[in-house]
Image (cartoon, rainbow, N blue to C red):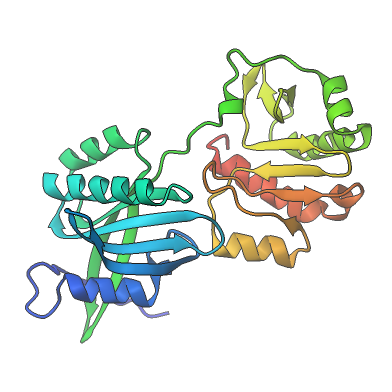
Length: 289
C-alpha cells in the first residue's frame, strides 16, 4: 500500500471553492458527515424572518432531523446563534420530529468549543470540524465530530426516587420465562465484569456493580419475549450486521442511543455469538473497558 501525502486546503481562501460547493458535496452524499444513514430533506430552507437554513437532513429510519449550518473558516458568535435559532424554529414548526442542531466549520476554536459544550445538554448540538484535503488535482472533504450530542439519561434511569421493584414484579409484568432470559444475557455480561448483577427497576431491568448502575445494556421482559437494548451509536454497518445475523431489530431509539432487539425464548442461546459481540461493543463504548 503506497503512502500519499495530502495538503490541507482552506476553502474560505480558495479562489474556486466556496460554501455552495460544500453544500453540493454533502447533498450528494449526506453520509460523509458521519451522522448515520441520513438523507437530504431540504437546502437553503427559508426561515421566517431569519434567513435560510443551509441543509435540513433526516435520519432514514427514525424521526430525527438535523438542522445543519456551514461556516467557512473559524466558528464565530453569529454562526452559533444562527444555528441554534434555526434549530429552534424548526422544532417549533415540526414538533413531531426530534431535532438536532449541527455546526460545521473548518476551524472550531477552543474558545467556541467551550461555548458549544455549555449549550450541549440543554440543546441537542453536534459540532463537526471540516477539512479539505488535496492530492494532485483531487480534493476531498473529511468531517470529524468534535462535540457529539450529549446522551441524555432516561427519565426512568434516574435511580434516585425510583420505586423499588424485585424479580417477582418483573415475572408478573413479563413472565418467568422472559425474566430467565435476562439471566442468560447477564452470564454473557459477566464475562466482562463478574461483579455486575441485575438491578430491578420499575421501567426496566438494568445492571449494577456494588449498587452503582452501569446500564450499557438494559432488558425489558414482556409476556412472550424480552427486549434487549444495548447502548451503541447508530451506524449503518452495525444495523446491517445485526439484521444479517438474523436478529429481530426493532426501530433504533435515537433519542437515547439504544438499539432495540426483540428476543423470543430460546433465541439467546441460538444467537449467543452475535449477542456476545453486541454486549462487548456496548461495554467498550460505555468506557467500562
